[in-house]
Length: 110
Image 1 (tube, rainbow, N blue to C red):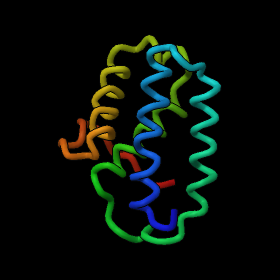
Image 2 (cartoon, helix red, strand yellow; image 1 turned 90 degrees about the vertical axis):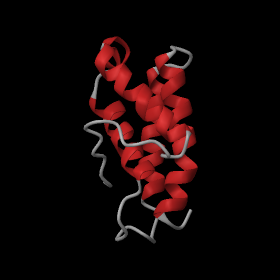
Image 3 (cartoon, rainbow, N blue to C red; image 1 turned 60 degrees about the horizontal axis):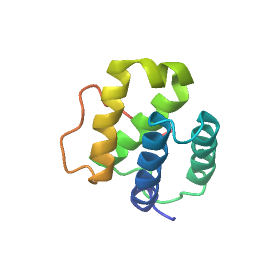
Image 4 (cartoon, rainbow, N blue to C red; image 1 turned 180 degrees about the horizontal axis):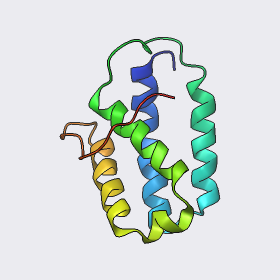
């Protein structure tokens, strides 16, 4: 994956899969956390496009990654507002950002 766009496009579907399965309690939090760290490691390999403006999908992508890393496992599962926000974001990721950004979705590159 050589560009930001390629990276985000490739990892967005995977992110949606992991978060959705975690929220449905089909995978443990440890799998979601491992995906987060693997994604951060792969991000270091991206060399092109970091100076370009963000696309909607990329903002959502970074926002979701931040949320799953920031909030404790229990909060991710039990907080109805957070779950609703994540569901909206996952819907956008699965549909390649063709919908407007969810409110307060301000994901930025690490």
